[in-house]
Image (cartoon, rainbow, N blue to C red; front, side):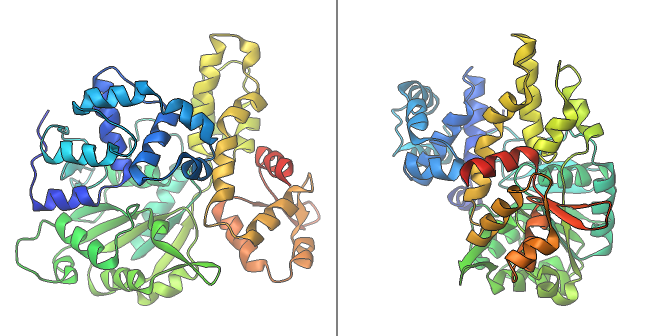
Length: 437
């Protein structure tokens, strides 16, 4: 295990560190002491990190505050106290963790997200340099042959690609698989998380840091002109802001991306949970394109359920829209249940425990407007979907919002035998919507 050597750059990275980075280190060190953090304990620590109440984080994550308070027990703080060698409470967690890293008391392995740089080589021998995040593990990567081929072609033919998909659909895994296994024409690949919402000047500084510049205070663009880089902005939707009831992106970020792809040989992939209005137009001569990632097909998902007894994979895939994250959770639950009682492997039972909170999070997200929710509720009212023309009759000015819901994968278009397009939502999502209507 190598110590985390601190420089001014490291301290800057620590100050900008987001919760995902922090929790990855805590989980790694806790696991080394024989303590495995539960999902709800992670939510408790997220509230501590953001300095918000359990009510606020509960609403954000779709968990009841009382449930979180039950997990905010002495056991959690005691185990963290043993990790940091001092008394830890909700109010002091973030400060003490950062202090432990800065002092060298808490060290990181070479592959830890807090390391200055993680390097890997893909098939072409290209160095993959990341800071603030490590590449998603693709050891359990199912299917996606077509999507991988599509993304590779888009990256090769467009200066900027916006990869869109709902939470858990596998966006980061797909990009990680691409850069780890495909021969790409880049001298260096930089993966930059944006979940800590840096301002545009801070983002430029962090990118300069990634480039390991040592030639004074030259602008970012001048360094990117030297070679062919691939920049991956993870969580691009994190920097969207609410303006006049719409989710928009600050023009300064667009200007930065545009300059990168227009004035240098570098290319950009932006990973986002929601579409960005007129993205290809905003980038102008940067030749941008949006690509929506859908769920797994049944044949690919079946690999996850090989040893699960009594699971109708087709029904499960349909009900969660092929979401890989949810499918993995359901597969794990069903395999555990087999050891207890095969009769417990019931689709609705599995989903009730695994999927419900995810649906709550989707509906509570900033990227859904009140009109979006009304459209989803209306679509859910009809068992076999609603004709597109009928929905437009009810909501005459909603064509753009409907297209957006389709792009996000929250609604789907199905062409009937008559040739009429019907709009529908996934089976279990429909049940959830009806229960709350």
